[in-house]
Amino acid sequence: MRLLTEQKKGLLATNFYNLETLHGVLRAARELDQPLILQLTSNSIEYMGLNTAVNSAKTGLKDYGVEGWLHLDHGGSVELAQACLDAGFDSVMIDGSELPFDENIKITKEVVKRASAYNANVEAELGYVAKLGQAHTQMGFTRVAEAETFVEETGVDALAIAIGTAHGFYKEEPKLQFDLLADIHSRIKSILVLHGSSGVPAAQLQQAISLGICKINLATEIKNIFMKTLQSILKQSEEIDLRKVFPKATNSVTQLVKEKLLIVQNN
Image (tube, helix red, strand yellow):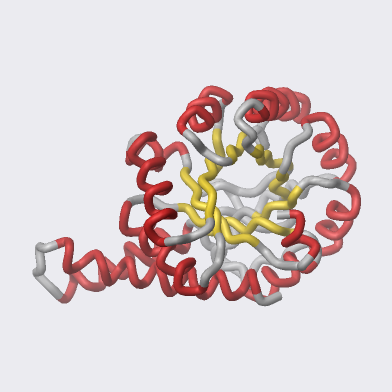
């Protein structure tokens, strides 16, 4: 990923929630011949089952001929990170962003230590990136000095930073803090990650990539377009064969992800 940063290109990290959204994402990557990261949250793991989710992702990457990796998104505990490492994840995120700074360092160091035995990467988060249901008005941008200390103390491979994004949709256009991003990028060595890209205008995403963001997370828009497409179809049809209905929603995911892949690669 460091090479992508040097080339001022991004790597899209897409969440999936079932077989249909997984196939929709993979088809987009195959059609554009682009690599990507497949992501699972704890809720998705609980919904699908850890082994089923991992096997589906790994088999899908192989069947579609896509270069990709499996990543734990927003892991909330060392135990979950360990379970994912044991299951064959290529990287894990330990999200201690809502903990006191010292506690965030402590839990991240522990996961980095464990991941090293698997040759797996670790992502952490520093600052306030509003999660679903949390207020977008609260702003806790990542502090440059803390980012330096955090990366040095933990040895983390990737750092999600708070520069004005939030998870979920925005009520008004976000205004990313590009000066802050450039300052952080100049001071730390880890890969920089942008969470909450759903709804961020293409121009801002591309500028963020040009200033050091490498990994761009996409989640909310994927499940939104899948469900909105299904809802629209079912209002107009009494079809009960899901094998006929779901493919149209899967296709909508493919088109969305293709658009995002073009944005992050054409900077």
